[in-house]
Amino acid sequence: MTSQELRQKFIEFFEAKGHILVPSSSLLPKDDPSVLLTTAGMQQFKPYFVGLKDPQVELGGRQAISIQKCFRTADIDDVGDDTHLTFFEMLGNFSFGDYFKTEAIQFAWEFLTTVAGISASCLSATYYNGNRPGTTADIEAKLALDKLDGLNQVSAQPDAENFWGPTGTEGPCGPTVEFHVNGVEVWNLVFNEFYCHPDGKLSPLPVRGVDTGMGLERLSVAVNQLPNIFATDVFKPLMDKLGSLTPRAQRIVADHIRGAVFLLGDHVRPSNKEQGYILRRILRRVLMHIHGSGVRLEDLINTVIDLFGPVYLDLTQNRESINQFARTEADKFSRTIDAGEKELAKLIANGTPRLSGAEAFKLFASYGLPIDFIKEKIPVDESEFDRAFVEHQSISRAGVEKKFGGHGLSAGAAIDPAEQIQITKLHTATHLLHAALREVLGAEVHQAGSDINPERTRFDFNFPRKLIPDEIQRIEAWVNDKISTGFSVKHETLPYAQAIAAGAVAFFKEKYPAQVDVYTIYNEDTGKVISQELCGGPHVTNSHDLGTFRITKEESSSAGVRRIKAVLE
Ligand code: SER
Image 1 (cartoon, rainbow, N blue to C red):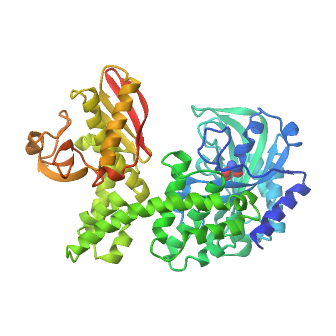
Image 2: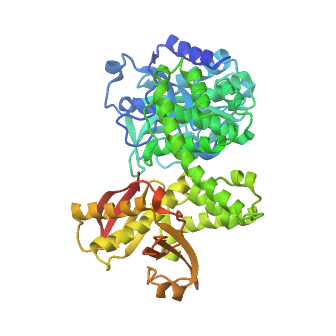
Image 3: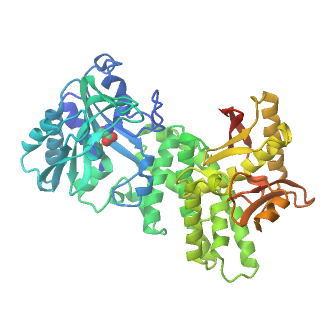
């Protein structure tokens, strides 16, 4: 059965039972600040579940279905296996104070075994065991499951498996029944009975409801007895274009390009913030994997639009802008990669037969050059590279700030090359900011703390009052001037005493090791030093490719300490 037949049969089945078809909402949730992107079909129906709006008035009934575009960043690291995706289509039926558990379970069973033709012997189900305080085991669901003829296995599971929601910090939630085909979860039936408050407490919902979600791609695997989601017809034409990549890269590219096209179609634009950053990240991963492979970005984008345009009409309408924004991002990215390739070419031209792990890691950390890419050009001491990578990650997690007086990184932030580039740039920008503060506000200003994630730098410093707009402007202008002039960044490992004697800025309350890392930002022609700090890095090698520095917030952090948040655009 094709995916279009499955969509159609799902709609017909539930329409025949009185459900109203509601179009997919945008991937950018409207009026729901709890999440960055739409992750579930129920999001657009939240007001009906909590009684804020009447579905009878708005929709003309209390039963609905949708085929919802969903994007789950939480699953990004699992993409590449047989069952996980970031972007997927979710088939769902909903009841707002109409039918409840028994009917919902019967509908699902009937659809799976008769319409989809899945053999009962492949099907198993789980229900909620009631382990969470204030709840009980879902006996009503169990009784309904026990009545299903031929269901292979039924088991009770704790809330980690069989209790869903809320999205974000509060909202409707409840126990679930999951149907599995050959061990893979295919359909999740949520029985919204509770409202979860921000403190985790549950209170009963005035109206009980049903919210179900079934991944179209997993359903297609089950119906057509395929080995994995990438073998389904929603992926096949894409996979056919990716034969020159490794099997895992094929899957990552196929998943991410679909996600990127749908995000662009819903008017998300690449940026360093929020949804735009998610888009940038997956798009850059695609670009990295196809770099030098002969696969063309445009070709992938148009394949996705051709595949899904007949179902999601606005993709076709937006074909031009989708391509245009993706191309701009690709051009930006290739400039970074080009800079990295130039550095690599220099190292090779020096006659080195082999790159040290540290050299390879620097190319990775500063330019985002993937290790596989480097290895194609020159042998690399990989075990040393791995050590540098792991060490960097563990330093990042522990917070460089605590150990060496540098800037802490948010946990886990150092893995993705696109993120790594942004973090590296923000590190250097933070040193410039520190220098600018001393320049504009006085040399007694010093760092009191710092935290960097791929989106922004946060910098705390001692200062007795709020900054005035003119000061903020002068600080930004100073940093941007240094960025556009292009100052070199030098890294040295020096004995601690020597570094301090040379005037490097350090946290005097910290304990430093005997040998310290010192980063100096200076003018290559005149030798003029504008910043010298003890820091765990990493940094760019020249300030010219940092972008535009902008202060987004200035506020009090604690008594006598101010806090600045800033971004690179
Ligand atoms: N909200 C549930 C889920 O996303 C069922 O639709 O799995």
